[in-house]
Image (cartoon, rainbow over all chains, first blue to last red; front, side, top):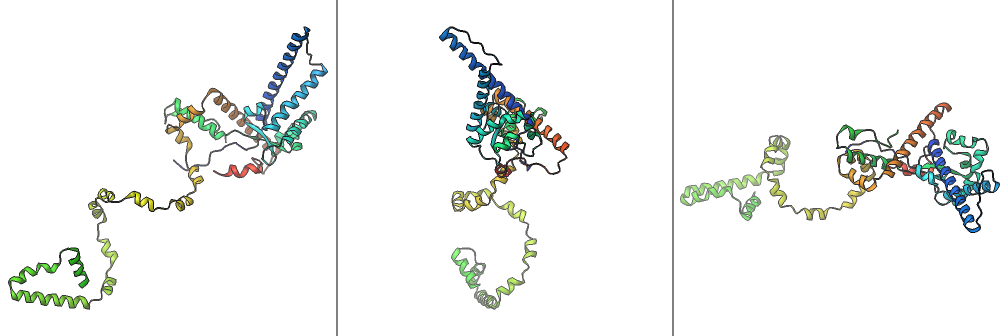
Length: 184
Length: 180
């Protein structure tokens, strides 16, 4: 055992742009997929009950309204209940209050409602993730929220080392390779 | 001196004067000489100031002549320890103040977890308890994402020419993370 600097854990740090973008991409794919499955289920139900085929078109106003409403529900509910969506859980990030405490349900709903604003301003609302000191987008500033890493890089590094120790015997070059989560 | 003689008597150790007594029983002159000697010795000892005598002794010089290694070699530590009741000793120790003075956080921060996992079976335990392809994939994806986050952030900070580093975490999460 030797004295060395404390290992870095990213838990609690402000999340960066790539993690947030990747999480949003996953969420968009999942929410769109679930919405499509829902429409398919409705079409099947209508066909079984009435015998008529129902086809959905992207330009259909009802579909567009339903899709937007579904997006509000998907993101708003996730943020209000747990502070994270499916994609955010995958990337290990979480929405919290600006001071770091757990997000209030009301703030989660507000964040979902103002989220489109960041798009509507030609995407400039997202610029805050890059340039703002706390990586907060426009919808974060309005809702009083911030996004942080909620995964423990130290635990991930230990898991990596453990796998390495199982694969390669100790004190071999393979056992001393750079490990996951060792970014500085 | 008298008390020392009493001590010899009480403890059963050898009194140097005992060597003279068998002789004195055989020869009256020697017996007389012995009595005179004993009396002289008693008078001499009573006249001596033991404290002054002890003050004149250079204990450092005396101890300097003692070969501690030789003394220690002659000590049978095993026999000594056999006589010590460790349970009784430990029962007397109040561990609470000792533990209060130990900084556990500092102690833990000194542990090289990487080396610990690599060199012990702890790694296998962790791998079996938290392993799995999904966990491994998630760790890899998250780690890569964090690396890219930091890469982008570094360039943005460079372009904006910021001199002061931005806060790394919200206020409420900073104290908890500052602890080792």
